[in-house]
Every structure is written in structure tokens, then in C-alpha cells.
Amino acid sequence: MNTTVILGSGLIGVATAYYLSEHQIPSTIHLVDPSPELFSSASGFAGGFLAKDWFAPQSASLGLLSFSEHQKLAEQNDGRAKWGYTKSSTFSHSHVPVTLAGKRGDDWLRTGQSRAQVVTAVESDDGTGNGRPPWLRQVEGDDVHLISEEGTTGLVDPLRLCQFLLQTCLDRGVRLHHPAKVISVRTDARHGEIGSVRVAETTSSTETDLPCTHLLIAAGAWSPRVFAELFPRASVRLPISSLAGHSLVFRPPQVPRGDPEPVSYSVYSTTEDGWSPELYARLDGNIYIAGINSATEPLPPLPSDAVIDAAKIRKLKETAGRMVSSFDQEGNGADLEVVREGHCFRPVSDAGVPILARIPDADLGIGVRTRPGPEGGVYVAAGHGPWGITLGLGTGKVMAEMMQGRRLSADVSGLGLPYR
Image: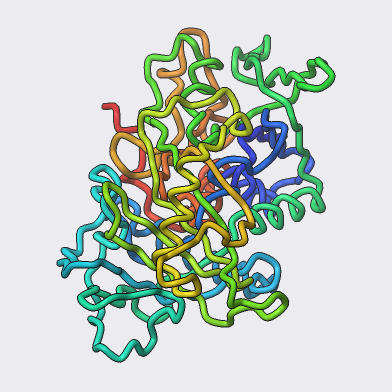
């Protein structure tokens, strides 16, 4: 019997378990996560932006699939009410005229620019303000563009989406080991192939062996560390680094409780010194703001160990005060109602696109083999950068198909390990 162990219970991990459980006995699927608090990094603190076609050519097919899966999952499970799924109108904003070059990929991320740089404008501001976010404060000379065609961008609350997927998996019979850590892989005596993993339960110091024919590393920015610890003699590394980012969720003063804003907006700005704010107005009336990132901040041992930097949160508050018109004319956002502060680490691959692949046995190290074909294997799904939420469902579906030997729903031939 095939058994699957998934290392990491963020969106990629739980989405893969969700799709696996549609074709595999759920009790043979194991989620293992070492963090004492689930969804305590990008899966819980991301903005939740969804896009249909904002991707590099290598991940364009995956983007189309994932956008469709987000819509289908929401339609089948009342996603609007359960995790705030909605279509969104998306705008670029700048204090000076800008040219949107229509680039694809993550060049904007490497240069510290706005995500809006990957698309071309649909239309420019006509001066009337029609269709623009009613809360976006503007001054004369501001450049505003609608950069999404109808039905091509959306929003979710990532934390609530992850919680829904996890609960659905558990209800089906998927097993969760948390907080726990896989400390070694074990081969069977007869064939010398990986047949189990040893799991250490953090709270009880208990160690148990789980049957394992398929091992998926989906630990986000921690994936290279997990892979290196389990396969110390591997001839490859996972070319993934981390990008730290702070975020803030706040409630504008003019939005009454219990009366959610029915229209959702996403705004990408290029107005700040050295960084590009991004704001998402969610269905619950709250606004998410982020954009202060760091590629040099050390990765903590666990996602829950990330420490909030008060100065960066203060900067986000000040920016919210300047950009959201519900505050006074001086842009005083100091007294805004803070719903949640966040600090997370996103996994960024060297190639700028996610890695969805089976790792060849020859690269796992001397003496390590897996069952051939769809009967086994060590896999990786990580490196999504800022696109983890929007590509998450498609990634989960494709990885489930890959591990089960079924036809893939998207072309991910350009998303293998880029080391040869």
C-alpha cells in the first residue's frame, strides 16, 4: 500500500493532502509539521492575492489551473463566507506617471519594485474616480491605472482557507502530526528502498516510525534545511532562499462592524522610499498592507519563532495613514484599529519560479533509493515566492497527480530542479 508523508502543513502541504485524499485512502496520508502554531508563516500572513495570468511562461499553465481551482473550491464550499473568496479589481498607484512594461516573472521582486510591473495597464485614470477604491487617498498628479481585466484577479483570507482545507483533510481521515519532526528516513531490509520515516513528537519526546513510500518536502522557506537534514549525502541542494516580510491587517474607521464591504480592491503602489506598498481590501472590511521585505534576514528555526519588528509595523501604520482616506488629512494612522500584525518568510527559488519535481534517486545520496515509478519517490514543492497562495491549489493538485501517477492537469515541465 502506498503511504505519503508530507513535510510542512502550510497551504501547499494541506492542498496536496486534500487532492491526494480524493484518490487515496486518507489514513495513509500524513501531515508532519514542527511548528507549535500552524500557518504561522506565509500561509497565514500572506495577502491572499489571486491572479490568473501574471506569471512567467514556465508557471503560466499552473497559474491558470490554480486560479480555476480557487474558483471551483469556493463555489462548491461557499468560499465567499468561509474564507473571503472574491474577485477583485486591481490598481497600480504612483505619485508620478509610470510606464507598466508588461514584464512577466519575478523581476520586480528582485529589484524592490511593485508587483504591478508584471502587467500592462487596462485603462488609465479618467479623472472621475469611477471604479477606483473609495478609500484610496489621492492628490493632484497621482497616476492610477486599472491593471486587471474583469474576473482575472481575486482575494482570499489565506489563514481561513488553510484552516478549511486542513479541517476537511482531518474529517476525511488524513493524519496530522503536530508539533512533530521527521528526523530520519529508513529503508526496508528486503529492497533497500525508503519504506518509513522516524517522527519525533516535540511535546512528548516520543519517536515513532510511519510507513512512507512517497515523501513530499513542502516546508516553504525551510525546505532546503529539511532536505539537507534528511539527505546529508545528497549530491544536490534545493536552490531556495527566504524573503522576509512584515504585514499589518487593520480596519478603517468608516467601516462598521457586521457590514462587510461588498466590493474588493487590490492596490499596488510605487510611492514609498525603497519599497512598494501593497494593499488588499478584504470582504470582511479589513485592509491588509505589506511590502517591507528583506532578503538578508536570517531564517529562524521555526516559523513561530519570527519576531515582530515594531519599527517596521510603525512604518506600515504610517503608510496606511497616508494612503487610506478615512484618516485625517495629515495621514495620522497611529490610532487605526489593528487586527493582526505579521512577520513571515517566503521561499524564493534561484530561478524565480516554483519547483515542482521528483528528486532523482541518484541525487539523494549513496545507499538511498525509492520505489520506482508512481510507487514511490521523494518530491519537492516549494519556491513559490510571493505567489504561494495564488498557485497553492494548482500546486497541490499537480503534486497529488504526480505522486499518484495520473495525468497532470498543468504543464509543469519548466518547474523541475534547475541544477543540470
